Structure formats: structure tokens, C-alpha cells
Length: 315
Image (cartoon, rainbow, N blue to C red; front, side):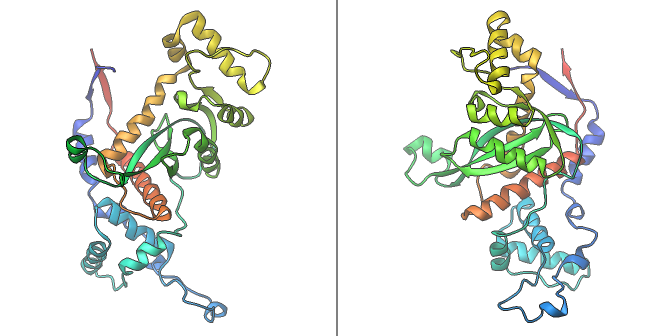
């Protein structure tokens, strides 16, 4: 583990920007009033069944406020109602059950804006607790059978440190199985991917095939006892080259040459997520959990855009 220390150059500016993260105005869209409720055309008035009154934008606003300020559903409604009174807006506020149910089917906006820029990404995963005892009880008396975890997979742009891809799965799902879905979600924004960084958990044939087929550079360390299979499989070419270089110059030299160390930025994103949002999921239903982590990652991207430290290494 590195013991390098860093100092921030722009403390005054950075400190002010950190204060702005608490400003409620950054979550209130300019078109809030116009987009709050769904407007139906005359031909849709007689549709069968109850139709949504509140737009997806309204539900996204309610859920964002809930997760940013860590409010329960009922408390969230009270907070938004009082906010609208202060803003002198006569807008109805959805009930806690409406927000919860719509969260299961919310058409969530993408994490980052559309871009034609090619991206270098790093992927990693971490666990989020759904329910179970706290760490003190586990250390003292051991874990019970009802401790349940979900696995959060994040794809990070190593240049901007934005979260560009998110997948939430059960704990038993292999890390490598989430590479293709994350790449698809990035492609949906119009971005290309130049290189992929992942730890040894991604040194799998299915990952290599996907990356080779998409023309993405593979920066994945092979297993310690890996053997090169030169010429047998096209998608294993970069792996074979890495094996040969590691044999000649060593693992650390390969990591430096390939730029593998930027993969640690994915771990930094995990730390940022758990520091700000905690390591526990509020929701119990899988669909709500997916909406929850997407919104929380969107919040992290907004925070990242507001406050960026300019640091340097202390000798």
C-alpha cells in the first residue's frame, strides 16, 4: 500500500465548492414547474386504468432529494412540501407510496451526457449491505444467516473520474459477467472505449472476447501461473504479450508500461460512494435498488463537477 501524501493547491476554491454540495438549488431543474406533471393529449384521456399524474422528472427529483439528504419516504414528502412553500410553488407532492412504486419502473436518465469522445475505463466491484447486523455485533457475536449483500459494479472514466457505467447484481454474480452490460451502457451515450482496466477477476475468456471484438485495449494482469498460447486464439493475443513481457521485465514494469495503476481510480470511486452514501442500500426490491444506485452515482458525478481538488505529491 502506498504511503504517499498529497496536498491540495486550491484549498480556498475547493472548500467553497464543497459547501455548494449542500445547496438544494443544484437539484432543482430550471423547468421543474413545466415538467412536474404529465400532460395528456385529448385522445389519451380515456385510456383504461389509472394513468401517471407525475412525470419521470418529478419522480427523479423526489428520489434524488431523498438519497442526497438521507430521508425516509414520508419525511421526504414533508421536506419537498415545505421546500415548495418556501419557493411559493403550488405544486402537488406525490405520496411516499407513489414515489416508491414509480422507482421500480423509473426511466432513469443516463449518468453522463452524450459524447463522441473515446474513453479509457476502469472497472471494479464492491458489496452493499441490504440488511443485517452492524459490524460491531458481527465482531462480537458473529454474523447471522440473514446478512444479505448486493454487488455494485462501477465503470470509471480514468481521465475525468466520472462514473460512466453501473450494474447492480446479486452477490453470487461473477464480476466478468458485468463487463458487456457496462460497455453497452457506455455505448448508448455515444462514447467509444479505447482501453479497459480491471484486476485479475476480469482475466476471463468471455471478457477477452468482448474486448477484442470491440477493438478495446486490454489492460488486465494475467494469472500468476499463466502460460502464453501464441497464435491459437486471436482474442488472447494481448494476454499472451503481457505474459511474455512479465516474464522478461517483471509484473511491476508491465503495470507501469501499460498504465495499469490507473485502475485504482475505480477503488477510489468505491470509497467516494461509501463515504458519501454509506455501504447500505435503503431499498429492498431489486428494481428500486437499481434505481437507487443509479441516482447515487449520478449525484457523485454532479459532486465531482462542482468540487475538484488540485493536489500534488509531497516529497
